[in-house]
Picture: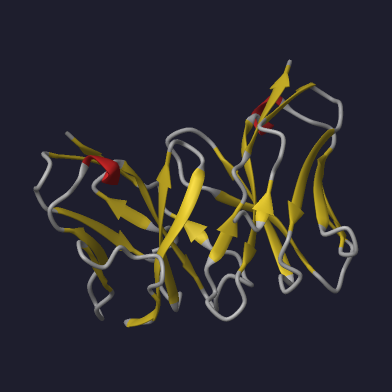
Length: 112
Length: 114
């Protein structure tokens, strides 16, 4: 039973354009969401987070939007750069246990 | 230290052998987590610690897996009698107050059981 879903396994965009990565969740108790970026042979690196009391959080080129009624969040990267090419994971802490529940990831390729 | 240090980077074990993985969390972080990543993408939660106490072990296959976080020592994850299906990358992460703050991940230990 996947509580965090990233339904598209991959995305390819041109450098300078916007990348939009989507994530859906089923557990309405989730109140905090994180995006991690992962390069091959490295651990995930924290990118940006959002609390459920907000609908938007921005950090430089990265913006996360949260639509609680739709149980949907998205990560926008603009402008996209070749160095952004990585696998991106959406995650949410499971209340009470503190463990992170991850989506299956989406591979982003930014072409020069 | 300022990063989560995992050792070894790679570990090869024959089926039935023991495997022991180590993790030094970031100093000052109270929470330590172990995750198993199989088939490149899916992260499976194994166990978490709050300081040296087990916080949540619901993901641990208890017959063969055990873990500890003792004071003044790296945390460890031990697999007795490894099976082929244990082949995975094992990630350790630490956070200061729990995952509603960011968790910092180590580079992972790739375990290959042959």
